[in-house]
Image (cartoon, rainbow, N blue to C red; front, side, top):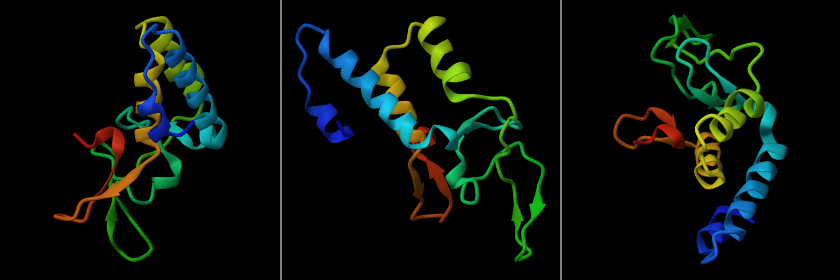
Length: 126
């Protein structure tokens, strides 16, 4: 099920939707779990596929090959999305599968601001 179909699910018993969101989360992870990382500078979860577009507020500045100043996220070496992010959310915080799915989905989406031209991921849109 894709995000649009998940939004249409009406589960009055509250038993089907959690299973659907868990399966959707697993499917999303299968398609790109190795791309999800946690920044060693700011501890923000980000998609490695967008590292060239996103900037980290705490990273040391670097000069890219075009001479522009960049502050890219840098992944923590041993961090794993399921073990270090999803399992603690479920076990320690009791977070349901629906917000976990939407948080992960938003992390994998990158947008560009039409006013300033900067990129941001969906999880940090607010």
